[in-house]
Amino acid sequence: MQNFHFQFEMQVRDYECDIQGIVNNAVYQNYLEHCRHKFLHSVGLDFPELHKAGIDPVVIRAEIDYKFPLRPGDDFIVSLNMAKQGKLRIIFNQQIIRKADEKLMVLAQITAVLTKNNRPVSSDIFVGKMEEAGIRVEEV
Image (cartoon, rainbow, N blue to C red; front, top):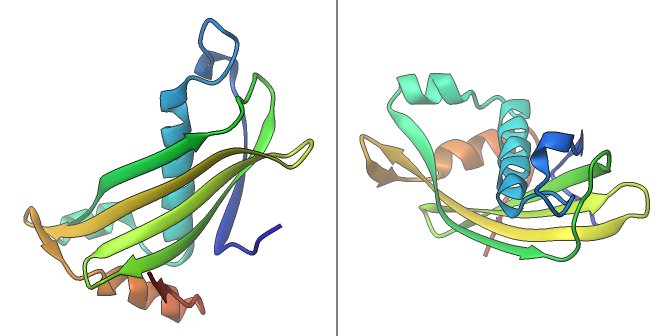
């Protein structure tokens, strides 16, 4: 298994599934986002505090490959690596693995930018926090 900057374990709840008995495709975005928020919080970035300072992270692109469906009660691990692209873009490479058999369920690349007063600003705020936490952020 690949080394990741962060991993977070979750379990599928019944209400996240559609009539087919599998996790609805939109719910996977919630799982991915929850992992990103937990990761950023773990390195000392607090969303309410950033917002008070006028800084808001915004997803500008989401590429998601759905490999296999999760089902009610499945335990799974959401993992991520963070990279940067230029001065503005933050890239989160993420995956969801079913814990029981370590099967890859979802592969995603989420691109975000930081905004201040609705205008893009440098990603240095995030990158600096990662470096303080001992995480090397690659340029892609």
